[in-house]
Image 1 (cartoon, rainbow over the protein chains, first blue to last red):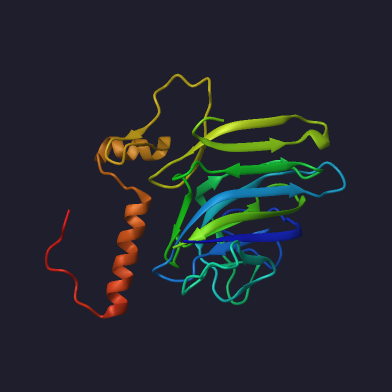
Image 2 (image 1 turned 60 degrees about the vertical axis):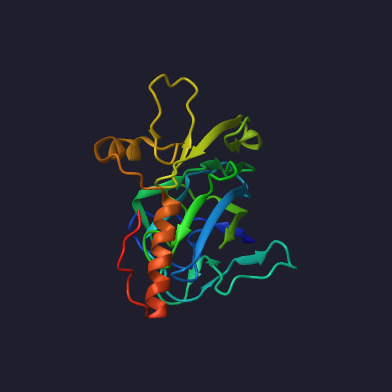
Length: 164
Length: 96
């Protein structure tokens, strides 16, 4: 297992409804597994609010009912232990998809860390063995998106996950 | 916070409070459940994977009695993908 940290910086969220295609930079990011034989496990989500005034933001980590297509950019995806051997196929993370943007599922919400982005912090950590599981590279198992359904707070943060 | 997951929402900078919650993750769908300490109703549990599951999966489990553990579903999906990549024919015997 190789552990990664997917991070985003100073993203101003746009409130996007379920089953509506995102556009560039509207959400902190989309995390997509790299191949049909990939499994990923998310064990931490951290969101730090950076808005200059009160801005309640309803962040949602949900599976995507339409998976993104093409390279994902704007966002970093770093191997936590730089000595570790990365798996043959790695996951992608970013807020911009080269070809098709994903759509948030209207039912498969996994975590809802709402916060006031005026200095607010939301952090979730899984119990060992209770990570959020992603698998394959098709909807709805292969990708999650972290996005706002209401509120337009500016945030930075990370998602820590491992890939098998 | 014991042996469960942990969710912290800190809105003190905006003049609101710090909230900390215990969570568990449904082993059938990976939804994170924030534990309501005031709940008296029994939580859903899968007796095959021996783990707490969310209310939605508990309702399905109650009617089907079938364990849909997501790790097992993922591994089966990955094995299937590997077989397709290998070009090998599907196994003749389906093991339980």
